[in-house]
Amino acid sequence: MAEACCPASCGELIQGLINGSEKLISCPIDWYSTVEVKQGTAHQFDERPLMRRAVKAALKHLQIDESWHQKLSIRFNSTIPVAKGMASSTADIAATAVATARHFEQELSNQALAQICTSLEPSDSTFLHQLSLFDHHRGEIHRQFEWVPDLNVLIFESPTQLNTADYHRIPRQQRLKQNENRLASAIRLFEQAIQTKDVTLFGKACTQSAIASQYILAKPGFEQFQTLIEKFDLPGMIVAHSGTVVGLLCDPQQHDPDAIFTTIHHSVLQTHYPMRYMKKLIAGGVI
Image 1 (spheres, rainbow, N blue to C red):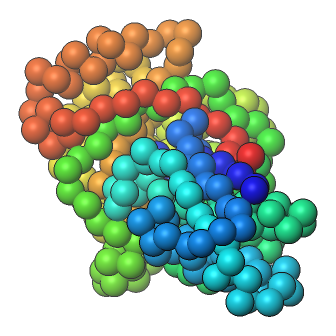
Image 2: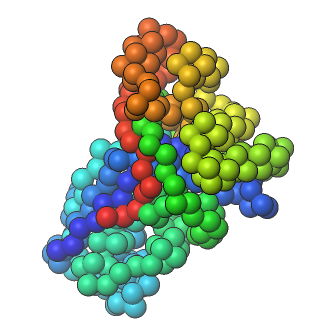
């Protein structure tokens, strides 16, 4: 028996057309999908559809006879909201692939895992152990960042679902092109924030990307979230560029999350985002 855990993401810190192709930097949080792979009879009610495909993809990469998948059972434990832009599928796929490799006492490199994930669907970069600029279509890791700010993420979940495949059917190339300069500015700010370990610049970069996303997949109550950032002097906001969730960055040493949640509870945002959580921003990586 082997087990692996992969974190969720509260949308993306940055996403858009960057240096000629669509790329993202996921926002990994301490919320995990845990997958167990062991020899035994497969039961469909114990797994999600992409998990079995992830087993097959891992076996193929490891050059193990694919028929082995019929002799492996999968069990998972995940409370990550599905089809909200929180990387639930990536967490399932990556954890399953790594657990499969571990079952056979082997390992998957970052690049191998990237190729496995993106062969099944456009994927987040949460399976990597550093914040990463990632081509989520081609599985290419363009840059990794060593610093992660000490921030909490106040997560606001909408009842509306949007799965990855449906998002990628939205005509958006023209809007992506129009936002290219804004994204170039956002990624420059992000890189400067990492180099100087500046939380304020980090938040500004994320907010710029969130604003650009409004032109492609608008979030209800966006202006009210911006008002909250000013009212509570928060670093910034993040959104699921291909989903419906919104996050506010919050310094655990400076900000009172209960006060922010209470303010939202008594505002129009309560209607749009009735479910709320607080998680910690992490570097990411399958464990």
